[in-house]
Length: 207
Image 1 (cartoon, rainbow, N blue to C red):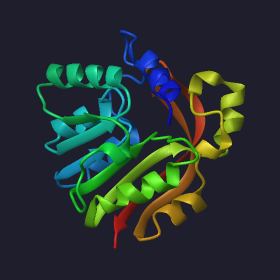
Image 2 (tube, helix red, strand yellow):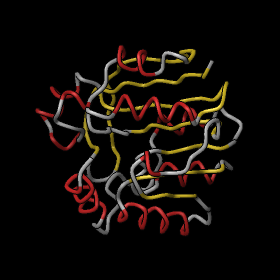
Image 3 (cartoon, one colour):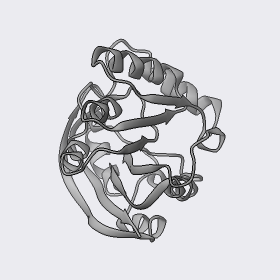
């Protein structure tokens, strides 16, 4: 990842409004409601809406992103909601997470650059405990057709940054699949996720 990539996200998160809103992602919320709180990691967490929600539900929350502007907004949101989150800035390979540290990993629209996304998934997997869970929602490769009709729905415009069911199976082949589907949903998340799009949803338990 480059300084251009970092600046792109800093620019988006410097706006006064929350780019993807202050409320949690619906799929994440639905999945967390089924679980007993433990420790959870949010990669590419941006302005903190999902991390703050998890903290409000009693989770011990860790997050990271490359955007310092995103962290600033996340910490403001945490303060407004009277919760604490441990939020680091930097690329994954520079951070100090430990093997088997987390009970859950939440990948919510964590669209890493194509050249590193599978390697990042494999690194993140090492931080998940045995029997720990992954909760995943992100745009599918079919989403390009929706984005081209309506840019307000958001999402990367590069096919290689989007996901397929097969990629998820390959990247997380050491997980029992509890749920895995490609589906069409209507998003209403802040300024940049509005409209109908195609997503991959996945919940897996580490074997």
